[in-house]
Image 1: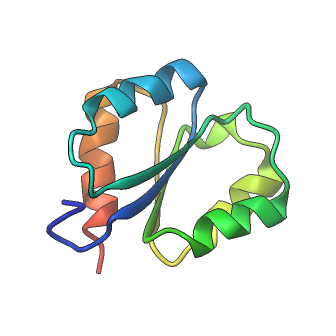
Image 2: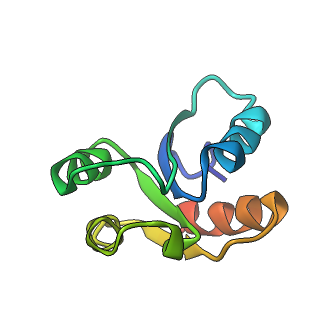
Length: 102
């Protein structure tokens, strides 16, 4: 879905570093620029805004894993969606739907 929709820069924010590693293992196309930010990362709102500015889509995985201030910043992205905590397959399916938004 990423390549078909021309959205090559995707931010996935939330969950923990171990879950984020699972995603990285699934990315096989070098054209995709994937920025992964675990929910436990200490970030400033200005950094989150920069993440949005340098992305084509934002996927929030487990919104409850993020600080509420950062969550609101990420929710302001033009193309954004949220996926509840769950298995990797659910994330990948949900992310494809988010990236496919027009």
